[in-house]
Amino acid sequence: MKTRAFLGLFTAFTVSATLAHASDPSCHAIEAAAAKALQQRAFHSITELEDGTRLELIAIGETTYMNQGGDWMKIPANAGKLGQAAATAFGAGETQFHDCRKLGSESIAGMATTAWAYSMDAPEIKLFGKAARAAMTTSGTYYIGADGLPYAHVVEGTRQHWKYTGVSAPIP
Image: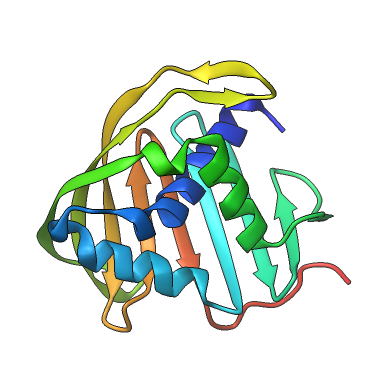
């Protein structure tokens, strides 16, 4: 997998994995949506980077499948473990979410959602013992449906969409 795609995927997982630790009261709606997403038995996510890289993940129970422009493959970790790895890689305990605010309504793939903006201060990322990214401040937008689940997320040139129903294994 390309390093950029790997970082894009981990950035998206980190937001979900670390929002449960948001301390700014303005971020509670996003925090609740991220926590609810992590409790889902199945999901299908599509992550697209600004350079055209596309990564799909399907998680059903303890089985996760990945496709990055080729054939589907099973990967040796479930979505929860990936989220935990992302949180560790990005220093989740040090990541600070703040200044969350409701932007308004927006339709995502025919689903009515509420868009929420946030800012995030993240520490340096180290992968395999080497600095992969310097500490940074970034901002993004989370799109939350009436059911309380996130359906899209946009951050730093990475766009991610999720669905939670009608999810099936792409290979046996």
